[in-house]
Length: 372
Image 1 (cartoon, rainbow, N blue to C red):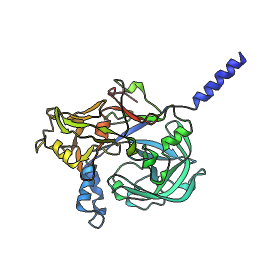
Image 2 (cartoon, rainbow, N blue to C red):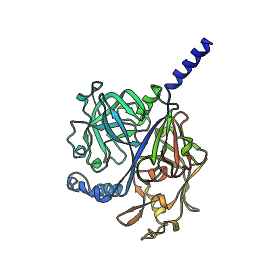
Image 3 (cartoon, rainbow, N blue to C red):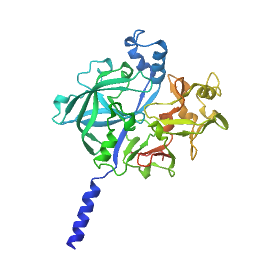
Image 4 (cartoon, rainbow, N blue to C red):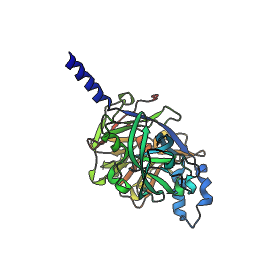
């Protein structure tokens, strides 16, 4: 009996070190008018006209998903964008004098008894090259959901580009792979796995598209069956990209094929809509009239991304964006891209499982109107 009790206690101790960490999101929309507030800082000396227009268009009707973390002893609180398109964690430094830092919470290492500031400087650049962060590497204790992560490494931004100025979060928490990380810093979720804080190596994202609290969530370490309506359908990752990318075999508008040759589909929660190669995007846009009927989006066809073992169907209610009483197609052409980047308009159409352990990504229809 005694040995059985000891075995049971040991099992309880062992399993208690593993968990699923739930992090509620606040959906954030940034209207174009708010982004215009930074116009006085962005003159021709800093950005070209085309770059500035890109920033304005990218900010129109943004929907991004932001969660809360705390760093240091005592804790300093931050709102961070959960970004599958990058792998670094950064928050602004108390020494940051950039315009983009003026309204953000800032991390002060001198106020944390567990902080260690390294001499190494890390430079982070995002996909459009307009968003950059530079600062020292720091290690400190971090709290996320109900989990404490000890001595995790992150960057404190001493220089943060103006492209972040109107975006209503403090920093970015990258959920990508270490091969993507500037400075080869292990991503936070990898630290959580190494410290045995997660049941499984991976995470899932439920973006409901609804406004307000308790509507969207990240489940770190696995999935929540209460959030899925159908079984997950998985596709393998394209390992050579080092990203959350799957093979995209074709794209179609309704029953009409737009793209027949294989490229990659990169799943990026730091992007609000869809970005793709110029020729393919122009082919998609040719199916729409110059003036859209914003009151009846259902008259337009579904956009279908064929990933081989499964297809993702995006309705016009998801790929159309609304701002200032008008609407537009939320699909952007990029001359520098050969692949498609599928952002939150796609990811919010599904409950998505990013399975690190098995190098795959899974999609389930989301259960609607769940209170998380």
